[in-house]
Image (tube, rainbow, N blue to C red):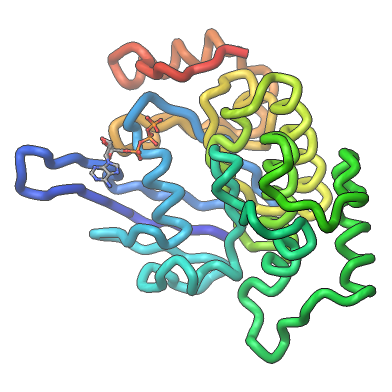
Length: 264
Ligand SMILES: Nc1ncnc2c1ncn2[C@@H]1O[C@H](COP(=O)(O)OP(=O)(O)OP(=O)(O)O)[C@@H](O)[C@H]1O
């Protein structure tokens, strides 16, 4: 479903600020894979997500989604294949628009102009059905401005919007990191159920090691622009946090330097 082949990205090449963000990264995700991504500060996790979503283009290498080469396509040209939820609850939604307007916008994403429909009663009832699955009462607040929702409610809505049209790839960029523990757990549970139900191919960056081990069927660890550890479903089931951090230090040759790391 997703194939990165020998992808490299260098920022400010040839200058004293030169940074290797991705170094010859290859990654292949099967349909329905749910991969958690961990690593130290500056390891290249966000660059990897940006490379998949089209915010960045590789200097070298190629990106394929569902068999099509998309390396040359910019972000909005890939948007119908990709759903993304960011760390910042303000990022995925339009605060001055209502819940139903936000959902209508998400629903029309990637559709041809003529196929875009406004908000009518059948659409409203479809939105209500989707919202009720979140279990937080948003189905009764269709006309509330999104800016009035709490951070957790906004992230739940962002998740729904990102997955509304069954994207080929779902990118979760530390999407629970800015929430308090109870809200983070709620959004994590919603993520699990939506991903499982829709069988979405998912990549989730997290600084929470416990979450990285508990969720998904595969875990990759990055350091200095490379994937240094790739843990499969069987190994992940028995993996402990101590082993994961020990493996990181053994392979990378240095301590896991992550000022945001959460050990669970
Ligand atoms: N737009 C940019 N311009 C210059 N350097 C950049 C840019 N984006 C990222 N980098 C550099 O590329 C490297 C990888 O950064 P990236 O943000 O992908 O890491 P990360 O793993 O997401 O880190 P963190 O967990 O700290 O957010 C870092 O050295 C970073 O400073």
